[in-house]
Image (cartoon, rainbow, N blue to C red; front, side, top):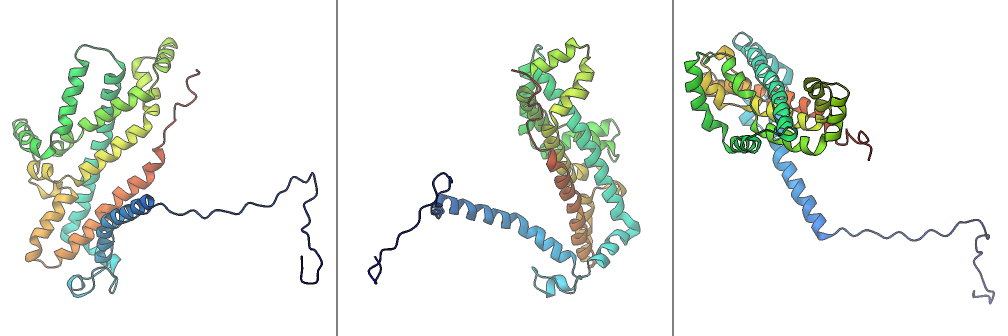
Length: 306
């Protein structure tokens, strides 16, 4: 009732219109566990991204500005000039190192992925004597650090006269025990036996089944193996250090270390090392951005009718 004595009523919506007053929205209160989780993930992201940010900033500075200015902010940026000097120094040797790294990592990762896919598929879908023993042997290879194998590999390759050659780095790079393990686990769950039997009934050989059917089904696992192996070979330092003595065959990792060691005699090599490290990160970022779209499951969904 109003102050004048009259009664005010609220008109109800017409019957049959099907509309109702919207319910008040509840404000979601963040739970403490979610807040802690977001804080931890933010701290982890900063921990991993801060060195990359510092590298980008440092790559734009002159050799004097590296120590005479704030490390996390730009000061007289000259990125293109620095990179041109990196590529032109010592007869374009950095470009040679970059091509060597692409050869080692690209060819090695492709061959390692195919070998892992074939071995993992065979261990998952074929029944033969000693299958579990072979798989356990592969698991033992996963536990062995690569640095522990470098010296035995050098002694063996020296007998074969393959040291200080491209083969000395490429051949060990095509073996990935973790890739075999991952491909076997994925093939067991993602490759249906009924699809393989249907292909055999249609007259397809084992080779055709593997290259036209299995590789397509296992694409997410193969992309994972390729990226892991590509990054591992690209960042590998100890194996090339043991195998190679000719600096024209060095990968980027080993070449940048030689520049850093010579920076005491040639001060500008400090800046060249930072610029070279900045360039070396770009292929890894490009590979991740290009191949991440293949990381999806369900490629065989609907291929088998229940």
